[in-house]
Image (cartoon, rainbow, N blue to C red; front, side):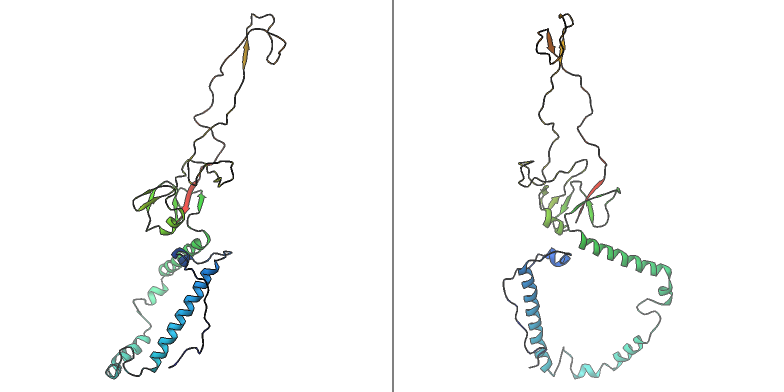
Length: 264
């Protein structure tokens, strides 16, 4: 029995099959894949080549009806061979593409635009992983991104994104919810540091002032003589008063409005 290779080295060890999202996107630049993922890859290649090698040996020794082609089939191929020869010699209208199509500026532009779009989509997938949130200066999200507006999405259709954020921001049946960052300031998750203790990832927080007080006194003008605040040596009449309200409807720093988008 024929063989492609005489001896193929085995590749064993602890193996773990990577998730489908990793198979689709591959490893990113600078990423270190787990050793058991690599073991799975090499072990799979080893098994596949061995299977192919065995099938090749069996196939090579067969001399009749290979792929269902026998003597009667071979005898009837003269007409088909002539058609193939004629087709190979054609220079116009091959598969509906003739000289006018190739020479068309619109056709060339269409091919170039498609190639550019495919290259951008591929590069975008490699550079930015699903679940990454970026801020854009336009009013619509670019290709491959969604506005962080709390929309519910299909867990199946957006499986790569769902694998990252899950139901952290809510779910409804077979749909999961995007984070809603419209009009919000983003704060780094405490994650055990203790500065903003008790928070969970994706939780929302109301505005607050840190506890403090102000002291203000008004002195009776009929007192003899009127004492000034802080003068503890005088006992002139005094009473406390409230200040008037001032300010806006919320507490906020200076800011710029941008469009928050998430990669899917």
